Image (tube, rainbow, N blue to C red; front, side):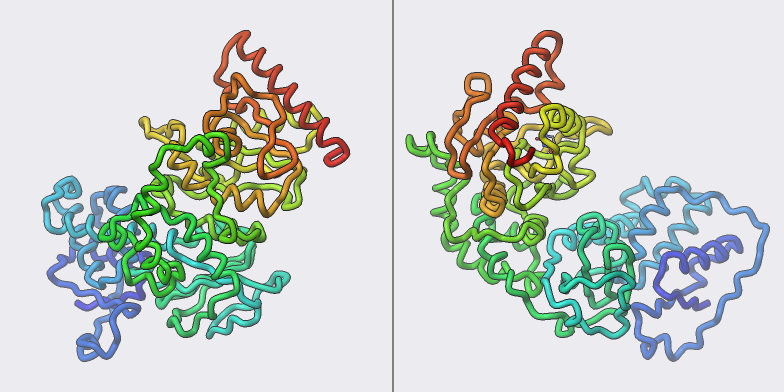
Length: 492
Ligand code: URA
């Protein structure tokens, strides 16, 4: 019996349910996926038998939830044999082998897990390797491209990506969460997805030559890439495994990788060298990359930072958490790194520490809406403990790897006042041996603005107990007051 499928999991499920209910053995059926197999192949010769699912009262044992989870992922695999594999497994699970999925050595189970892994890995690559270009809004002309129902901006962001599997629609939520306020399109050979800030639409797949050319920000992005390229992490083979060459054609930075690799040895030595006497008293953690970092519009910076892989933190964190606030803010607050809530929501200082900060800011007359808030490190570093994710301090290497982004934010915003919340921020911005206990609350020179001050991190207040907490809170409030006074009319 030959069953024709249109390539969706729901279609397969409807047919598989009916087949199972009638006890039809996997040996008696074949699937033909019209989305994956050209109709002029072998199947065109055979005359597909349309299967009539008849209502049935036969009771089939329940399919384990874990199977459904795996099957919904495997349904996106590019190999059309997945449908038969899924049916074989569903049949065996409901015909005397309910524990099949825990037998990793079973060839069907092993194949299912291999396909699941491959799709999830491809999704991870898509999150990391999609590169948007900003193009005039109407320059994107594609067959089936829907017209937006919402006000059109001047530009939209467009990326062409070539995933291994049919995953564009599966990954759409990730991109909507990350770029809710932009108009963007991701084009793939298997299908295109378009977001217009409110509505998601799809259109048929396209080839690379139908994607718009690179935009003027590509050179800036390349300059950034040169600064975030961490030579200490480079092992050529490992890099090629991670960033397989098949993705390179849509990633502009791969053009400069050979040059960067040539200078890798020298850069590793520089990064690992202990700070010199001069560096100890300078903000050496934010390397001076001079011309490499022009000031850039914050959305462009945000777009570039979202694919930063300069250190290992990008591997486990949900997303990059960029700074937030007006691009002409007079005051910038710098924290350590996003916490659990910030990592989930993609916004800085929205968890308990952020709420405490907001309360105190409000009390001294500094509205959060007038302030730009960011972190020294843009990814959450944590350790899993059961279901929880426990905060871990970022290392000096993490702060260093992220420093170009902080520097770029500061160069773009050019604040009058800079406030470091806690030791990590102060050591990133002021001096590598800065001590919060000994030096908080003093106005200090820094290369980024008129005046810089460091104070306690609000999380330290939350962790402290009893009278120590009261003392620290009083000091924190007095520091914020000093900031509000110095800001004067600027925020008032
Ligand atoms: N702590 C920080 O340093 N930054 C945040 O964004 C949240 C908590």
